[in-house]
Picture 1 (cartoon, rainbow, N blue to C red):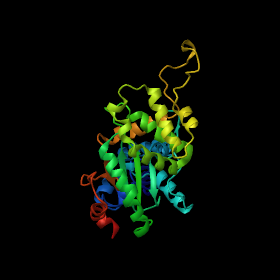
Picture 2 (picture 1 turned 180 degrees about the vertical axis):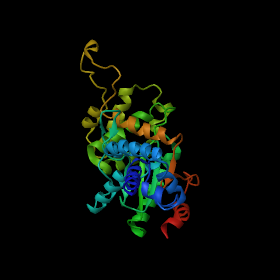
Picture 3 (picture 1 turned 60 degrees about the vertical axis):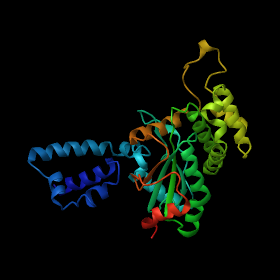
Picture 4 (picture 1 turned 30 degrees about the vertical axis):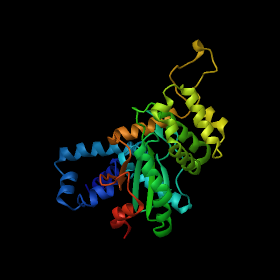
Length: 315
């Protein structure tokens, strides 16, 4: 029975959408608490049933660890992405490898945790920010984060905070998907530095990509303008156009295998949309602090207001 209990605790810690250790041994009780005893004990038939469930869960352990990466609202921790954060920090890297869609036999999954990271990967304080490039309120928050808060944290609280930005597509702005595809292609071409610079350029030129400014323009024309903007900050325009062009346009219509396959960035865009939907996100900007939505944050926060808001986490 003792061995079975150990197996169950280890298995559940891998299958829960947050740290199993904190769930079973933290605020929700330890293995010696009454709740854990109830969970891990019972009649002989209950033990047999639990043993069968444990065996099934153990056989799926590796799959669950991979499937949980990046698909939990607020970027909740899992054994795999926690390990990735530690490894990246040890290597002295800001950010992490950009995710790409992969298949484990089911629906596509990200090859690495989603998000664009700024700060210490293993930081004890994690702030997740969901932004849309066509949202004026997201623009306010982004500019304050990058012009003021991130430099301040780097100087005064190094290794204390990790800020991760997520793409929050808002479909009532038709160009939103196109702008996010372009930003993701910038990251694919130049990593987190290119993504950060291109995101800044998009927000600074936001008026050019609002609904009224694009009303009479085609999808192709918008992609060309987005690639042209990339060229102004050192990202290869031709390479971005190649990533954004709809697949198989070089073939006659009747010879195309798929007519709605999107471009090279569509698969990754879908993963970001899936993450937001599973987290129940609707508006932008939305902020999570250590995995929980923070309703006290305003898009109009100044640096001083951010610091006052985060003071209990920085002391």
